[in-house]
Length: 552
Image (cartoon, rainbow, N blue to C red; front, side):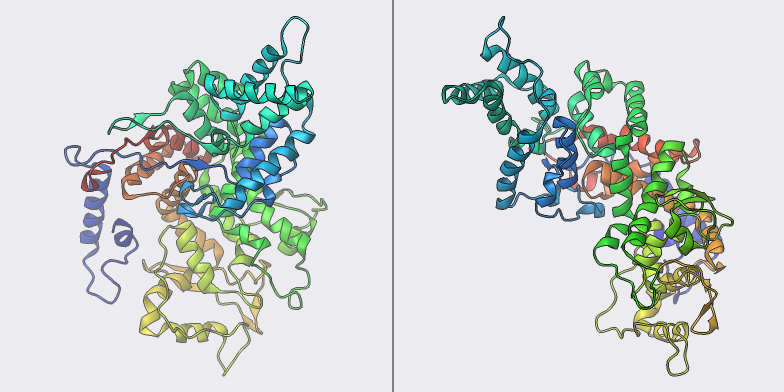
């Protein structure tokens, strides 16, 4: 409701509107109620956290960091579906189909066959200790890293029995130990991120090992390293100063590239560039697979640079630089870029900077032969502002797949005629002006001045009454409402960090994260740190959820 009032969608535009002071007062009152819930009526709820299977990306990275094998064995696993928040690390959608267990067994064999001995064995056989003692030392060492916490004596005893059985059958020390390691790699404690169940109704603080795993899988999509396990072992990770220092360390590490890649491509939707996006090659001969790869990499490099440079999240809306190689630079009309890999490039003006000017976004929100102001406007509402329109009504007439003049009408004129349908007007009045502001970008993101022999008309009037003309004015309008963007970005960060969709009781956390980051210019790293410091990230729900009307 707050967002509807803020966006002037309530009351609807075709109803009598209250005076502006009344609307502002209503917005202020609703915001105050959300920011200051009555503690007598509500209790905090960290939300449900089901057992979390490692997704394909997490499995590959964990195997790499555990064994040194970067063979990507999970690429042959069944695909992971997107869940709440739009991310494939959502625990509630990470099922275990029967074929997956077969793939786990095969992957364990594949990895153990090629792993370097120094990554598998810490205590080779020695004359001064028995094979059993050496095996126990190796299994405790390997098992703790694989399980991301100390192993229980019962697990080690079972592995020892397996090791000794293989030795009796004539296996070498290493072969027998690998047989026990296979049991480790197909154990639920390796394949799942398991947290101790609560034994009472009240939420509990995560233990230090659980917190370490949440942190490493949030920022690295992989297991904790030795330094993180060390502060988990002495429980200093539970101290706020140590936790923040670890977050900053993980962000500085090259493995944070996993966050930049998987969070960004799923949030922006650019992951589809390699699956469902196919501009017409006859109309756009410069589009090829190499350019597609460069397009997909640009937003990832940009987010990685914000992390490395401690940049403001607002640069996602407007920045004076981007990343391009020679092919992408030609598309953008940039000169003096000859590198085949993407490099940082200064932009000559404000038309291109930020994610809305990136070819990956502009191409995935277009059709093969023409742009789509509707798709682009819808994308801005959903992924930038977090105010998605409702689904279209059934049996709505579709527009032609190209942008040629038909029946004497330009594409824009035909779309405006379509928008006059009462069933379509409410949503299109929100989407279309946003999309039209990007009409100077063609279906693959190149700048253009004309469409079908006519000058590009990039004008539009937003629902709040502001008029925009082109991408620069659109960015100014969105920056004027930066709180919408920052809240939505924080919602995405929190959903990705928690591995679940957000609920109404997460609203105060989202608002607190944004408020706490304000003093630091909304730096992306600060937003991430505030997410890690938040209540739902560090706590686990009790065995009984709070009453539905009392959760917040």
